[in-house]
Image (tube, rainbow, N blue to C red):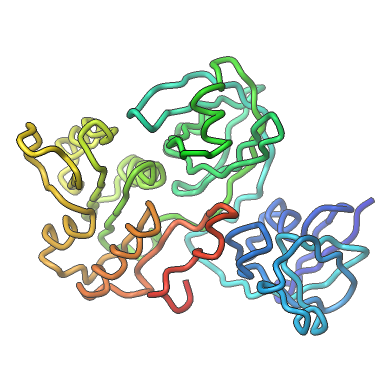
Amino acid sequence: MSYELTIEPLGQTVDIEDGQTILDAALRAGIYLPHACCHGLCATCKVQILDGEVEHGEVSDFALMDFERDEQKCLACCATAEGDLVIEAEIEEDPDSMNLPVRDYRCEVTRIEELTPTIKGIWLRPENGASVEFQAGQYINLDLPEEIGHRAFSIANPPIDAGEIELNVRIVLGGQGTTYIHESLQIGDTLNLSGPYGRFFVKKSANVPVIFMAGGSGLSSPRSMILDLLSEGFDLPITLIYGQRSRQELYYHEEFRELASRHKNFTYVPALSDEPEGSEWDGFRGYVHDAARAHFENDFSGHKAYLCGPPRMIDSCISTLMQGRLYERDIYTEKFISAADAQQVRSPLFKSI
């Protein structure tokens, strides 16, 4: 059974299946509703019900309080329709968004490669010659077996190579999903994925120099975005500042060095925070934000910055960028998070992002 879901102020009506969440129905119709944790914990996807009834689902009492339920509010990531429904959401038009609808894909694992001692590259090819249409910087949800559920992973390849999706997966101590990928997943296995998700992409219409700051497996999205920009002939300065603890964890290092040698507008600044003294490393020693401050001489004005990595790295980078005259409107961070991280979706340094 399906119902009609009308989304204001767009005035657009889409189908919503019985048991399907409001958020999923909107995304599959190519309509972006603000969201973050997708677990009913962060309240980013809160919408107003104008007409109709919903089943609220499993939501946190802190994310959706009793008085808000009385005021006919709900969380789109958990709420399901009990009939035709009209909602109102805060939707901002973004000239750089392609508003791609979410689709489902059955994929074969075609390659598994150890990129570092803790990060594996996983390549997935959709069946029947399909390709996953996405914007560089977006992510997919990967369905894992053994009742693990789905996990979100950024896409590491550029959109021009959409016939095969690359994921860079860092193993997390005690993490059921990443442990399965690292220890059990085999070439030839088939998995389901859905996507694309997320609003993390380059604001190309701004036509200004860009800075990418990444740590760990947070390199995935910047790599996709950088390769996309270079393939399109973007000629303004592009700077990647990428941090790891040691040289053995620094992956795609040679690729970025080669790109920098071929593209005069691309600069690559690797930084190692815990490389042993006396090693052959002659690059920057320290954290990503320190490397950025040194490279730009503490002046980031006139740029847009895109940040991916652990929460502490993100906060340190935000603080450094703001001290160097780059502010909230020009700083973007990756949005997908786990249920465990849902309460930390926003940096305290941000008012609205």
